[in-house]
Amino acid sequence: MNNDEKKIFDIDLERCVGCYACVVACMDQNDIEVESESAFRDVSVIRPVYSSSGRLGYVSLACMHCEDAPCVVGCPTGALQKDSRTNMTVAEPSLCIGCHSCIMNCPYGAPRFGSDGKIKKCDGCLTRIEYGLTPACVRACPTKALKYDTKYNIEMLKKEKMLRKLIK
Image (cartoon, rainbow, N blue to C red; front, top):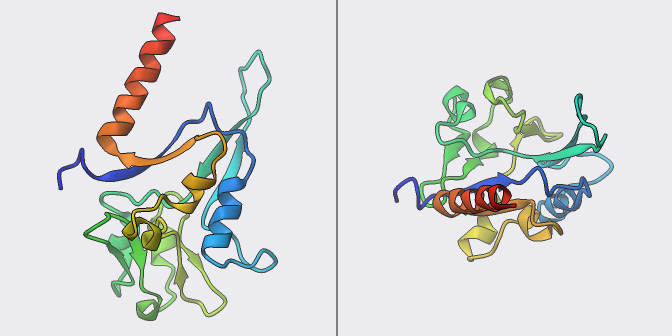
């Protein structure tokens, strides 16, 4: 599979309205308890410093499933690996020793630890993807701000959007 055929996550910051539907979908898909655990996906507010509109922006972030994932490189036990079929960064909690090296290496703070001290993280809804379904967060996004598609298709959509803006 070449780079253009690999599927990636993308967010259109102009479309995200901070509704948290992606977070709720993540929690539902992964059976995360609202009272005691945090979702693998989070929405943050971007406060515009120089904005005449004063409009707040939002960004929905989770594991970015990096090509050369620093969390995988930093894990001494192999509890984090890249899935060769989907390119997702996946965890095997039974191999985790709870050293937190993955958190120290991840620039996005994606790895989490359960009450048992073992790694828990977004796997990109691997089971859904294996059955040809869209990741839960992407499916739930009412504004279509989140996308999961090939790198090529996402780049084409961005080019089309840029051309539409130039034409206006």
